[in-house]
Length: 161
Image (cartoon, rainbow, N blue to C red; front, side, top):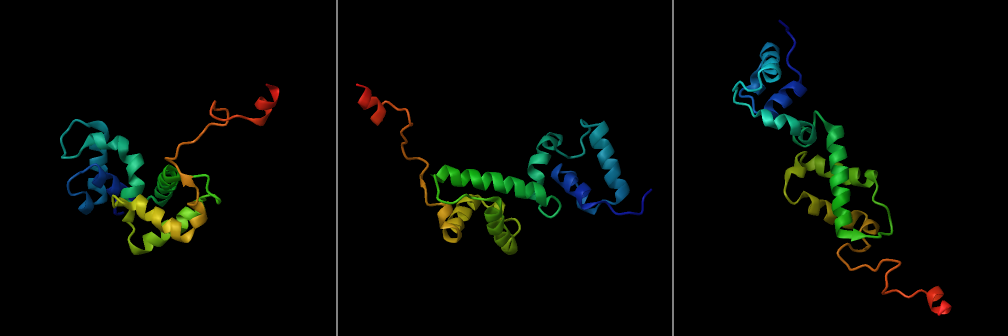
């Protein structure tokens, strides 16, 4: 039997798995819950065993203090993708440092700001104010003509005929 308390990572996982009473368990109870999850996944402890596959994807968002690196990676990918879905061919690159500067500003107000359904748009509006050159391209939904499109006539082709 261990006198050490359970780690925040262990408690976070059990909370995610919806194990009842996880936040008040001692180390021995946490270890027993883990053993049950591993050896008897069908035993009903009130947890949702199907959630374990999503744990690695969700843990950074739900437990940002315990998993800050996963959270930063997710926010970098999702916010960068959102900006690209809005505009393309900007005059400046959207770097990870620029993204993190804004997200850390939001974190100072509320570490869980990214759980708000409009978090991507809030980020984009702030980016437009702070780094307008990262948002000054053409709308991503604009029709584009491919370089070798039949609608374009190059000077070289005209000269050959």
